[in-house]
Amino acid sequence: MLEQEEKEPVFPRLESHRINLVLNASAIPPFELKASKPTDFGTDFLAKKSLLKAKDFIAHQFTMNWIAFNPRTSFI
Image 1 (spheres, helix red, strand yellow):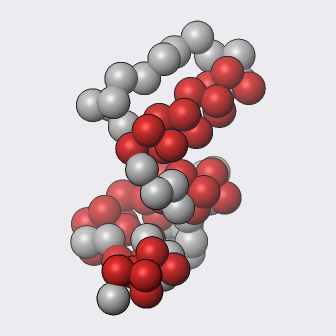
Image 2 (tube, rainbow, N blue to C red):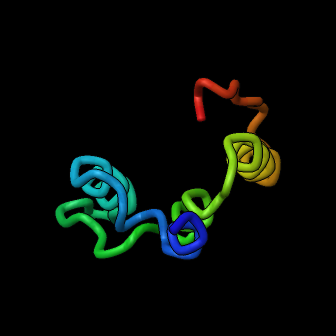
């Protein structure tokens, strides 16, 4: 059962309020409608298997965008 859960996408298994949060955050201007699916970044982030990998993923994204921010684990 654990192997099956690891192969399934994380996004559909989230609680409905978290799904709405991600879809609203993925909306494009003029932000009147929520997105039908998460952004590529959001999908990649949710696919990370551990907190450390998720933190590294976000830190790398910040670095690529010239943002000087090193998130703490609690932020992730």
